[in-house]
Length: 345
Image (cartoon, rainbow, N blue to C red; front, top):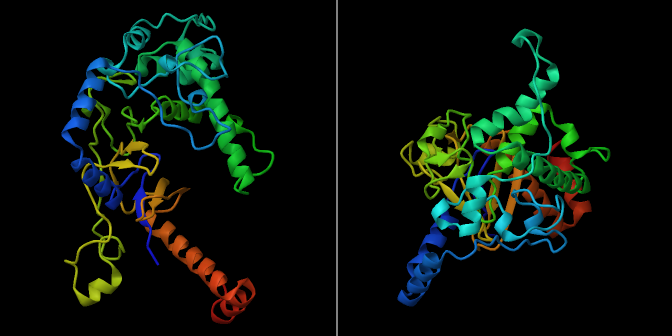
């Protein structure tokens, strides 16, 4: 049976292994003619188009962050995409103008008439968390933020419905209403940096990440995005990734680890979408989003957990063994054997 190779990315984390190596190998065989065509396409700066969405009922353009249009909820023109990870020199003329001038109708006007900071209205503090602080950090205006809060709300509802369908959330869960105010702002920070082909959270400042290392203007990349962080070994002798248990007894601590560690990691999913790791991580990092990619290169499994990668993969191994037992022996015989050998999975 073929083993799945763990690919890790959390709200911050992403580790690459053989799948990325396969991609690099494929790129080695590009012909000279293909290279010339690629250079020609870059010189003409054709429109940047997002990947096709695998779900035919969902229009991918309607989910990506964008500049304000008249239709707040419907599909948009590709020129209206925010494209925060695309350097300005790679945009079309219209896309550069939209990024530079921000000439959008402002959805509201707010005036703070507090005479002193100590008596400031609590509504102004909420405004600062949802709008004021983000507009300063990201170098965008209220119109862009307000428009994308609505689009983020749509994405959150889709995600919630998917989790309800799989029994992971209660039936009465209501999208973004379940988030705290501070979590709305953090969700927006993630959302605005999702492009059609790349996720790159260049503004990340948690887990000792340093946004100043990237060349960017607010939310927008100035140079081509690049990976600066990776999955580093924790070097704990009990870690199954750094030192597999059987190899400690047989070969000692110098044996090759089972995870391909790296100081800078960028992962490509089987559909071609890419994500760059945006903060330092180790084997012991918790609260992660991870991907398991089959060695055949055709299937990804994406999950999330509050546990470490090692603890979560232990669950997958046990769950996978149960599935194989039920497939081979049928569920009735498998359950009978489990009850005889152990009390719980």
